[in-house]
Image (cartoon, rainbow, N blue to C red; front, side, top):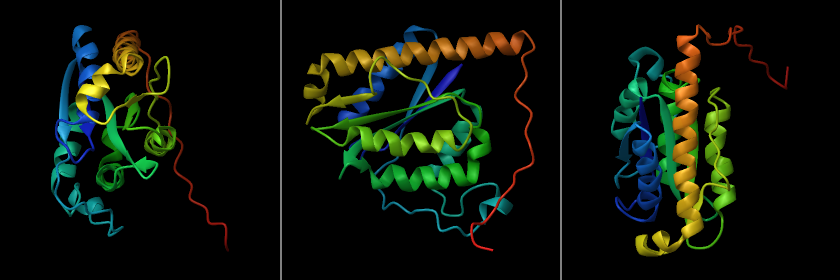
Length: 206
């Protein structure tokens, strides 16, 4: 089993990375492999709704989003981490997730997911709510912890001093490992994925 963790911070090894590393450590201690993928500092390109991914099988804008899509196909779960920017997730990860879920959402469907937010002080619950919507629209079970999955601090050292936040990260990792083992056991027992109805798209204005 393997979990992909996306670091949506402009800082490769900053506060968000510190939180994700704590989650990854708990997963690894439970026998689950992990990989943290940094989205980088290149100018973020959002989804332009061109629809080219339907023919190409990948996002036409390329970059780390297509790398994440390839890794998503072989991972068993996803953790998304972001700093709080103006009480919201970072523009970098918002653009990336728009493109990832539009072009490769099927590779993540039914896989457990969780979001992690890092802030100096506030805006974390709004950012977590924003990030979790990607999972709920894609039929992904959301993994919870003993509190909202957030850490506080202005530097990685300060985040590590957030004892409750670090405990929340470790609990999240252990809970995700437990759910992955439960899914694996269900699959071995013959539990199949739910039946899918054909999609229906309606407009409010006729």
